[in-house]
Image (cartoon, rainbow, N blue to C red; front, side):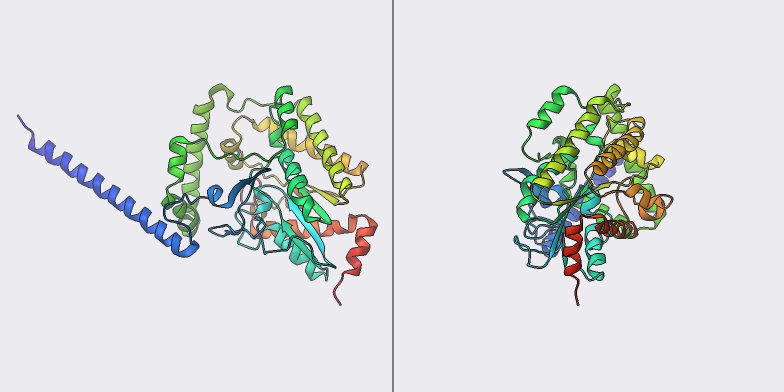
Length: 381
């Protein structure tokens, strides 16, 4: 016999599901048209951080000239910050800052990423400088060197500030090292595809994350991001199985590769008459930040990371000393103030970016005498 109560309940469930789907589609359409009006992006194109801001040229991934995504705006050269000419103006010192998202800027308000704050500090000292934020999110150190050689050298910078990184050296084998040495471009990773990439293409999710969530009370923000973090870590663990966190000890191949990259960087800078400053990144290794680290670097265990943050900076510092190159450990800049100056393991708050800009500005005193003389002659009256 037909159970009318059961049939009625199923009908109501379908009505609710249909309403939710219609509401979600309507919201997605509304967000797309709002973004078209606000940012000029097509309602049909994928609108995400990497899809909008990145493109590819003969050297691999690069910034898309004049691209805009939320608060991130790129200039005509494809770098974050105000426009600048290919040829530097006479009487100006051009400084290029190379790194990944910690340099490009993530949590800071627009214009407060540390390269912009560095520029403000130097100009307040009366120096005629222009600072190029030449960072691209996700670049390894070897990719940053290729980026420097292929894209930054033609802009004839006087100074390059290279932010170091260590995690891309984890798990190196002779075969991987040979493939890395043979690379001549900065590769583009378009994503893993499938359901994950399909979900990312839903603009309403990005709008919620970048526009709605930051306006909620801090407790709600933390609950949202903690749930998201937990799910991501569990997904990574299921995907990789025993390979999850399998890199536990820094080995000699990794150390030798890092040392070789630093020497290559020195040679490249010297060959093109560029004054080099090395910066070791600040890392806030809290329990929550370690979990967040596993979502991006799931093969690396905390034990490897803690070893690397001791071994690699010391190598860079020693090699810098041998070549009379300024070196700054940004970990010492933020020590005991991590919760104020950092937003996660590697990204800064507005105040943290200012502290980094202030600290790096002081490194000008350690540059070779000829550049210091040039800086002094460029002081504004």
